Length: 71
Ligand code: FES
Image 1 (cartoon, rainbow, N blue to C red):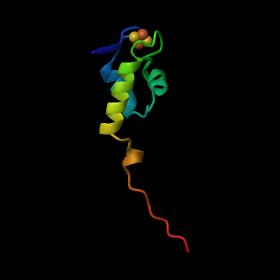
Image 2 (image 1 turned 60 degrees about the vertical axis):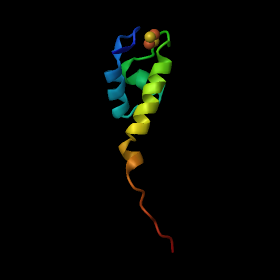
Image 3 (image 1 turned 180 degrees about the vertical axis):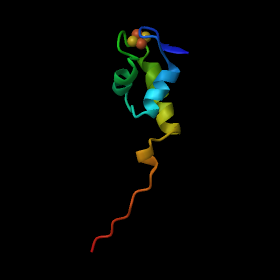
Image 4 (image 1 turned 135 degrees about the vertical axis):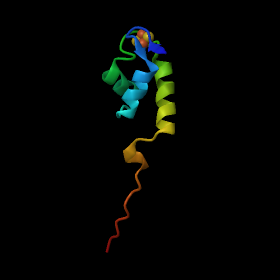
């Protein structure tokens, strides 16, 4: 489904940009051009971002943190 009509960007392309590391609408715009013209699609991009980041945390966020003992 086309989300950004100005740039003809689909939800799949936006989800791919998020999976590849985009965490904000600005990063999505740089990755796939969605939201780069009128901005009318920004609420939908934000909604996809919110959903994707909640459902699929980035690898660096899902890795356990190491415990460093101080002496
Ligand atoms: S619909 Fe996406 S920038 Fe206009």
